[in-house]
Image (cartoon, rainbow, N blue to C red; front, side, top):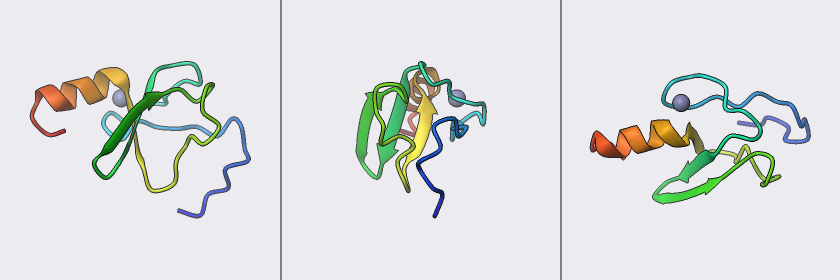
Length: 68
Ligand SMILES: [Zn+2]
C-alpha cells in the first residue's frame, strides 16, 4: 500500500479485530495461502506489504470458525 517500512513504531493492526498488535506479541502473517508466525521484534520485514496480520489468538479463532 505504499507505506514506508522504515518507521519502527508504526502501528500494526489485526485484520480480524482491528486492535493494535504489540511489538513483542506473537503475530501471524498471512500472504495468500502462506502463513507464518513471527513477531515484530523478531522480524524486521513486518509489516509485510500486501499481507494480512493477525493476533495469534484471532487467527486461531478464525481457523476454528472454518474461515482460515
Ligand atoms: Zn486481533
